[in-house]
Image (cartoon, rainbow, N blue to C red; front, side):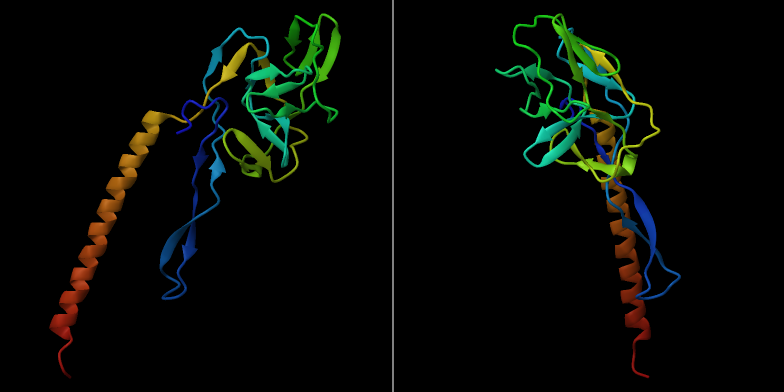
Amino acid sequence: ANASTTGFRGQRVTFAQALATARSPDIALVDSQTPSVDSQPGPVTTTGEPLDIALQGDGFFAVDTPNGVRYTRAGALRRDDEGVLRTTTGMALRSADGGPLQIPLEATQVTIGEDGTIATELGPVGSLALATFAPDAVSHDGGNLFIARGQPLADAPPPVVLQGFLEGSNVNVVRGVVDLVKVSRTYEALLKMIQGFHDVESRAARELGGPT
């Protein structure tokens, strides 16, 4: 559903072995863990628009939402009527000092450096608030927004900001269809196996379950 959503990152479900102590400690089962965000980058395309940005490398830029600070890689930006930089969903970009990034309305040339600094022909504007987190420290918060469950990595290299580019979704439709077929076939095979064990137990109960 989000194969064409700008800056979207898919999820991966991981499994951990768990012991079924209800019957026997020798029986091993698997238990699904909290889904993790797929950190593989999405395809980057050239747009030539000065307010389009893509991030090269791990990391996000911060935006202000009604629910607090969130993070995203969806770099299709615009200026509102007051010159504040916002995402296409209306979220204001945060600067490195925590305030909004406001471009003068009379400015006609906007330059965004690889380090996230923003300037116009009238002078500097500020810098994007960039942050990198551990893979298990962020989770989806709707669409292409992410919420952080921990602090940014202090020693991680910041992402490189590319002006005039957009990063697409890292969801691979073909891989998703193949995975769905594999899951469906595995489910059918396991269902047949369970039915086979059930038939064996039923046969054993009929043949061995007579009066003593």
